[in-house]
Amino acid sequence: MSDFENFAPIAFEEVDPSVPYESQLRSGYRGEVTLIGTYVFATDVALEGFLTTFPAHADFMKSKPGFQSAQLHRGIDGARVLIIYADWDSPAAFHAAFAAEEALLAERQAKHIQNNPSTPPAIIGRRVLVEKIFERYSL
Image 1 (tube, rainbow, N blue to C red):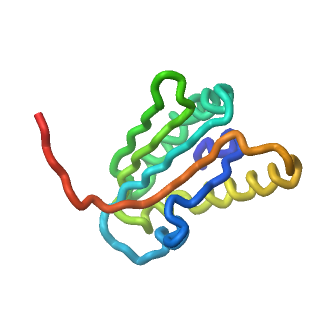
Image 2 (image 1 turned 90 degrees about the horizontal axis):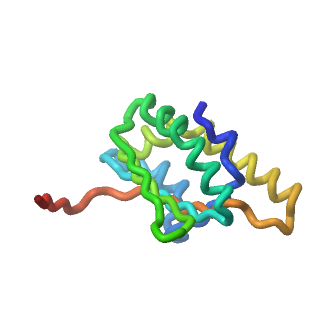
């Protein structure tokens, strides 16, 4: 298992509500995909906590079948935003790698809401799977 259990509570929002993330995972699409995850942190503490645990998370991803590569980007000038790009052989490969972690995140978020109904989550996440339709090489 990755280090998801140490992440601050995350609330996920859909990038495109007409095609939810869950339906993308189960779409049957068989080509390579890039997961784009955008995470907005309520506090510097939540951001730094995520960054502290991310190396273990990255090692976990790297060990899974179908993983190709990942990049983590950080907002500049104090923006508490991280964006991850993770390339996978298929949505099914990504889903197989993270089914247990996704369930753990959902469980933690449900407990957070139950125990802290008026406290917003520390992290707002948005995820989408995309296919490459154009690539330009530059020098």
